[in-house]
Amino acid sequence: ALFDLEPPAWLIDDVLPEHGVGFVSGATGSFKSFLCVHVALAVANGTAFGQSSASAQGRVLYTANEGRFALGGRIRAAAEHNGLSAEGLDTWPGINLTSTKDVEHLIENAERYDLVIIDTLAKASSGLDENSNSEMGKALSVAQQLADEWHSMVLMVAHVAKDASRGIRGA
Image 1 (cartoon, one colour):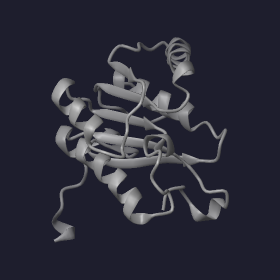
Image 2 (cartoon, rainbow, N blue to C red):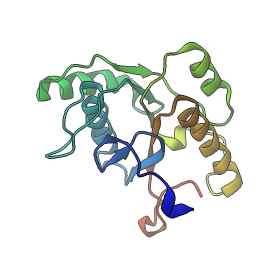
Image 3 (cartoon, rainbow, N blue to C red):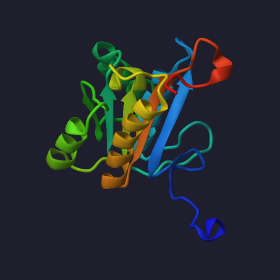
C-alpha cells in the first residue's frame, strides 16, 4: 500500500531524491541552467546546496543539449567562486530521448552516475510533438529507463509554455 512505502533517500536533503525523474522549469532567462550547475557541483563535492540542504557525494553527468559551448566556462566559474572542484562532474554534448540508443550506449559504456542532468528536455526530444502526451511519454520513459538502470536521479531542464499557467512545455 502507498502508506507502507519507505521514504525516499535523498541526493540533496529534502530537495532531490536519489532515484527518479524530475524537472527544473522556468521561463527563458530564469537561471535554470545556472541552478543546475550549482546542483551538479554540490553533488559532485558532497557539499551543502543553498543554506541548509546537505548533499550526498556522487558522480554527475551534465548533458548539454543547449548552451554546450558555454557550459565548461560556467562550471569552472561556479566551482571557483564557491571554492569547489569540478572533479566528478562530467559533461556530454547532449542526449537524445527520442529513442533508447543514447541511453543504451551510456548504460553499456559509462560508469554509473548518481545524477544525470539533461539540459533541455525540448532539445533532447527534438522532433517529437511536444503537445502529444504519447510522444512526450516516450521521451520520459527513456529518461526513466536510465534512472532505473543506474538507480540515479535524472533531472531535466524544461521551459514553461508561453502561457506560464500551463506549466512545463511538452504535454
